Length: 337
Image (cartoon, rainbow, N blue to C red):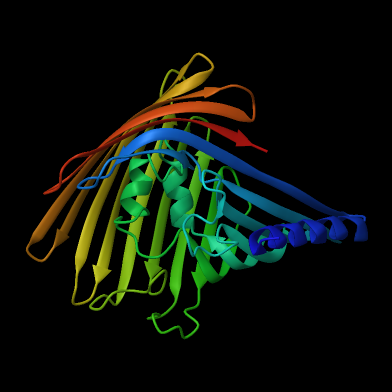
């Protein structure tokens, strides 16, 4: 039995044991599988035709549970594991941590929730919610420009060794805060801090997100003391069309200063039993003596076969200063369970 399968089996067994041991405990197993076939070419890269995984949402399996402690307070936990069903491999990439999506325990009540472990960053949540292609690492211009390899942000979409606070929602308004410790790692230059404010009421929604990074995947390079990022986003649903907008700035501070201004405009529109998606993302990256522009345009159609299963097609044009243009297109199926 592989170590990856053993870990999932043990977690499932513990989840079942917990459910039987506590009458007022709840444990659930859930996840998402996303598979596709397409042709992919990054700017300056070589075209690759492939059966792929996670074009719209990265595939994962999760375990979560809660125990009622009384007085409106519950103990909660979550374990979530990324996977690549196209090759039957664990993680988003070789060497990825097994529970890289989420791994935390904490308390939840009238005060909101506080969790310890590996938590998703509020900046990532704001980025995926306020663009038409969600958390697609293949087709969302915002995710590509901020989080994908070569994107502006340093560090991952989740922070290990972190403490997170999520408020309850009051009249459409909620606050999320996150901090991690470098824990004296050789590549750490300090603690990471981040947070967002999110507002949903009626047809309008908005967000402001901020983060400061001093440690993360691979650490900060020489000449960078820390990175700061700020983003605002908004949507308005006109029913016949829903509009999206984002504007952000990412700065590397130190001797190797770098600034990226990132914008997105997008829309979705209902069509049949699905929706049309359109997004345009623009990046202006400024370094000493070097300016680079990236322009990414994506169009897609997502069709619902049921409440839990959808099929999609998407096509993207990706242009970067000084590189041969890239373009990608794919068709896929996504099942939530």
